[in-house]
Length: 133
Image 1 (cartoon, rainbow, N blue to C red):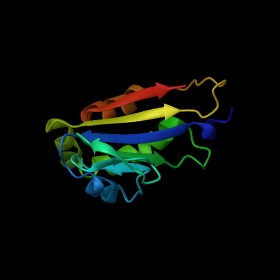
Image 2 (image 1 turned 90 degrees about the vertical axis):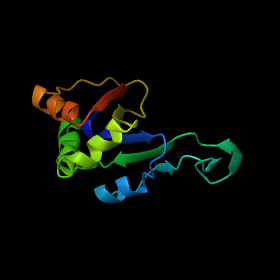
Image 3 (image 1 turned 90 degrees about the horizontal axis):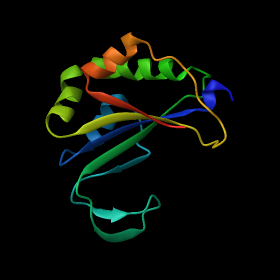
């Protein structure tokens, strides 16, 4: 499988913060977003019973250029590091930030190197890295 077929999503959860501003800071359009206290809804907008108990934002990162996953993550980190305190405040005030690497091809496996420099940058911003491959 080519490296560009792996998808990367950037997730933010927070007990109360409106995460629309976070997406705007990155200049990216959320794949899914909601605010704590809003009525639950399906991705197509059908209203469901109950309210969300936390704010959530999921942004799918573009990997159409054939870049390796670490290169895409490094590009995102450059944007996050330019406003380091804002992103650190999300984690420090009860939120969680994480990246998920996944494939929509269930039979494929993933192998790549995430060097200590990249992992250190993630750690400084308190960002977790998950794999669903």
